[in-house]
Image (tube, rainbow, N blue to C red; front, side, top):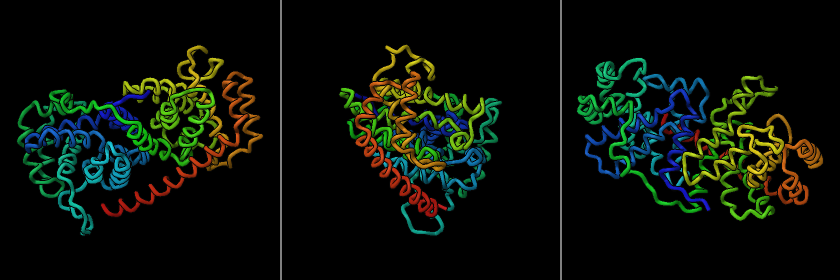
Length: 422
């Protein structure tokens, strides 16, 4: 039984966002605090404050699609080409029933006040909260953590007011100036403040469909980060659920979510490593081997996902203790993780990769039989694979074909949205 809440999943997304763009770790929380304080001056209602808090926290969720250089470019005060991560974040959140209302603000969080019609095209107005988030975002970018924030307040205020009517909405600048008069504005923005936040948290237990909806959204960020991993998680999830049933495991939801999110920690692995054609060097291998721990750490942000976190975080463990990162004793290696490990290897071998075609059944079985004999994989789970190979392979293939269609559609829509806000 999986029970989690909207607020817990928000923490998972925030952690994932920090992994996607570690150069701005904590940035979303700081932008949210600055945005809330400006919105309070503008007499936002508690419901509106909660909305802008969530949108500001997740405004950079689309950064998973950026290169290292593009992420570094976000440090510029006036970002030259922000459309890609704005469009990706908009479409990513827009897929979710839980976070879809945040999408318009995320789309426009770099929109200049004097360009709010977007190439002169008619379209929906820019949400007012987007102008607040844009200004709050730039406050944080201007902040230099080598110095006290109170030493920087004058220079930052001057930079913001210089953009009044061009970069920034005039009314938002005025609200900022009113709020920024107080030292507490700067100190809360940089260091955080739980003042009143507990009242804003959503502790309603989510339904199965809401959790799956969230999982599908986050899977986009995992698989579509790299062309080498696109659609992989969907294949693992489909086979994992089926093999779990064969193994007598009753909670298919846990296996589906764990299958989809087992590679969540790869958000910290640069694409240069994920897409390297040759063997990894020692440093690259160390980074790659960290990803199951980060999967575990991220999912552990949600108390209701604790079991899924452990199952997914152990997918690179081996029965002989030579896996990573926890090295559990055999009796502490749950059957669900053993199922996941077998399905992960099976999917990786059977699926098409940009550098090779999927391997035929005989090769997959031969490779995995050797892994079983060496104590890498569970023999009973391997027996389920060999006994039901065609069924599991068809499930994998169908899931990945559907994922491929979604992949292409997502990036086609991304290009269209980028065009609309250029």
